[in-house]
Image (cartoon, rainbow, N blue to C red; front, side, top):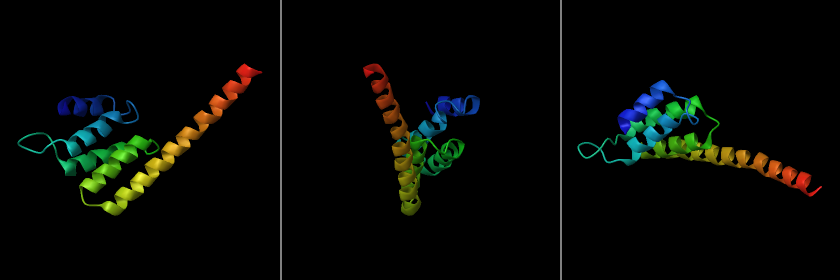
Length: 109
């Protein structure tokens, strides 16, 4: 899986808002380390930063970065990334609600 994610990050780095790097970072952060698995929190942080740099306005990338920072003993920056993720998620949610209300008004009228 790690090999395929690395390949996807090279071939289509923008897929799903930097999804290959985001998912690879989460695997590296959550999997057990050697010899049991591919886990590597330090590399997970590098990859999470790459995803968050590639598409900084996507909340899941900021959440992955927050998790990576926390796993590497950086609680302050981790909280900042989590706050950015929350703000981005709230911002993304608002326009959808407005569009839904507008669509309902058109159908009712």
